Image (cartoon, rainbow, N blue to C red; front, side, top):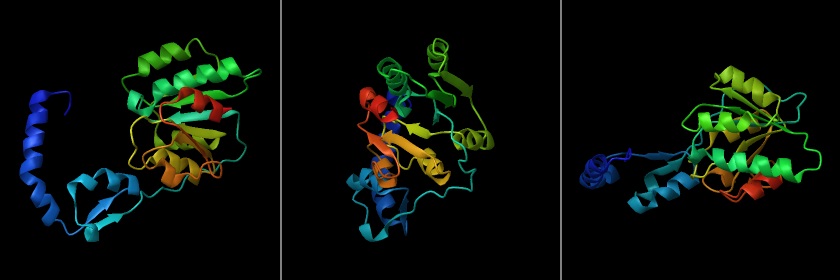
Length: 204
């Protein structure tokens, strides 16, 4: 927990001491997705008090005239698939006879310096840094697709739902809640988690 053995020990003791309380005291357990509920199956919570309630998506700008633009919005961290995306983009550029797509990245996080250094050598990539909600909506409304190559199992994946609400197709990793939100090949595309070559193929 937080890369600390001591903090992990405290968390483990607390979890063990309170497990029965967590099972019996709450009148309901609300999860963001079936995938998240499955993650907690080991706690053996009473199924009659377990419910799934998806996140709401606020009104957003609708896609009008999409550009040849792929958008990533999120924390610039390995668990969000940033390095997978960088490798996939290089694959796309190398394997496309006439690559016309551009990649726009918005967000901040521990991989920002690495991402900016990588992007500086690729004219097709633009890095916007951290944007507010309105600026993100404008960026998505210009896009052909929004990409969400998360390597961890997203409990919901709000960026995918927001893209779909804007009329923009998502390209996401096929685990966590994404397969609940996306019907592959119908309203978006899924790729095997961590597979940069498959992601490059979906981008093409």
